[in-house]
Length: 114
Length: 113
Image (cartoon, rainbow over all chains, first blue to last red; front, side, top):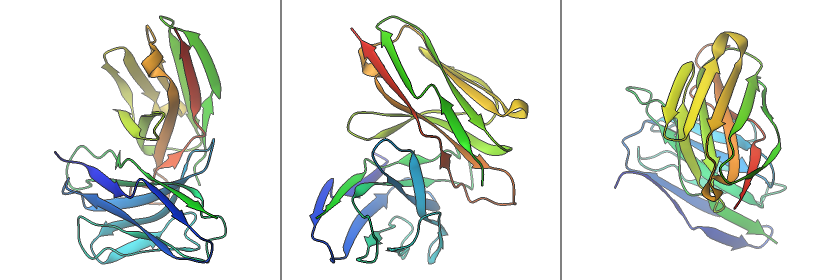
């Protein structure tokens, strides 16, 4: 089955700790994205990557870091510098080399920091 | 950056009713997608529709790119249609936008039996 997996589904952390969220895809997509969703809001872009070993900041990158060492994987680290880390995090991917060009989303990780 | 506005913000229907959701955007777009977010948070792709009209069962969508809006039609609504519907676009301005989606605030649809 082709798709995007995110783990864990729920994550609880104490303030001041870094935490890494996993995102894996087996769709052979080149581009991968991380979005954040707060209650009652739309999604906002954190980071994106068009190709292995390259990534760019999105609209709300402060307090986050990413890596793209493999085409299939795009982990997101929420650092202690992120002021309001409690949110729902969604990973997405898409092909830009051939159609369909639409973005597909994983099931998300709910992060709670206390 | 590009702005996306969805209306109405909330919609309550009886099962069997029809509805129209609207998405207005402030600039030219390369991509427009409609999503349904289910109660567990999963975003389900409904349509990839930067222009024209598409239909999939009880759902259909129309994007009029020159007038900067898109409509999502839901006919004979069912309780399982409940959830949040998002419109998201990739702006065409400024050259390559790397597929970055800008989301509207969503329409919360509640369908009562």
